Amino acid sequence: MKFSEAVKPISYLKTHASEVVRDVVENQKTLIITHNGEAKVILQDVKVYEKTQESIALLKILALSGREIKKGNYKTLDKSFKNVRKRINDFKQGQLEVQS
Image 1 (cartoon, rainbow, N blue to C red):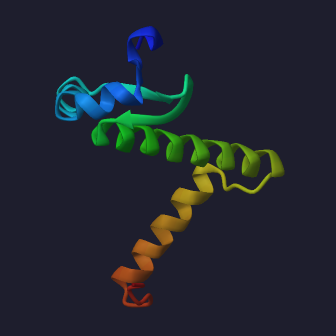
Image 2 (cartoon, one colour):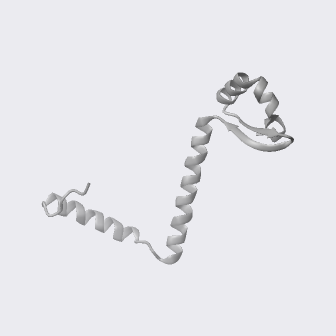
Image 3 (cartoon, rainbow, N blue to C red):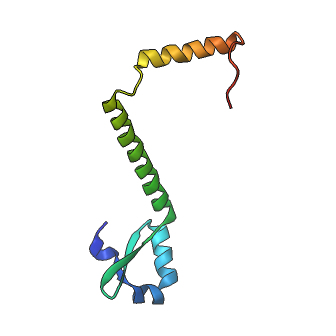
């Protein structure tokens, strides 16, 4: 995205609102709206916004996972699979109730 093409004054938005919204949605654009020469708000297609939020959530999960690994708070893959197999066997034998 070229920021030089994505910056519009609020007066432009006021006079071309429906055209701007249509363009943002159809082309999944993000616009920076200025007021008195200062960037004030972002106008963004909702689908682009949702993708951005999902990406941020995944990055947070990765960061938290990295911290837990550094602290030593994790199970080995072998131990995890062993626990899963045990739970499956216990369930098959009726020794484990389904958790909701």
